[in-house]
Length: 255
Image (cartoon, helix red, strand yellow):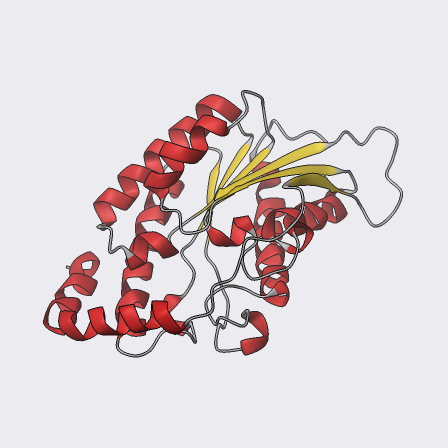
């Protein structure tokens, strides 16, 4: 019953929600994807030991991975996470971002997955859910799409650790009016639960929820919908801590 709660609540409110959705799209500022190369290297704060081998990070996701909300790709989540991990591990971390503004998981399977390299990557981040929430994807379909993408990633990239990010807290997004905000928040929560159940059932995979107070406007971009540079830093801290905490569980990581 809980996973159908957003649909149950939305049904009697549907005409109002449609009007609010159209108005929100019309008045919300359109922000571009960040400028710059979508690859680079995160370096440790101190000089690294000669035996410190480089690690690799690849992210696949929607607008935050594409850098919407910040000015440059270096400010976006993939680069910032690489820098955080490099400082944790005292070794360089090369990073590559495969982000697409407005993408659902199904879009990524169709458009992004064919672009993935056929090479091993140490850590892969998959970060979706906002567009699947606004499209009101069912939890079952979201889980199926995510499982398909995860399988493709495992086959192409053979990651030592696969990180599934939770869906951001849409119920806190300033750009969304009520009751649309509340309904989409419930949908985001349901999709996050589906992602968590999928991730926790698989080896070498972790689920990391997005823990952010989006009511703190300093964490949000001017559109009230995407994370600002400060919001990205907070998210990168959370992801880096979870990844670092999981390292001992995965024998392939060598120090």
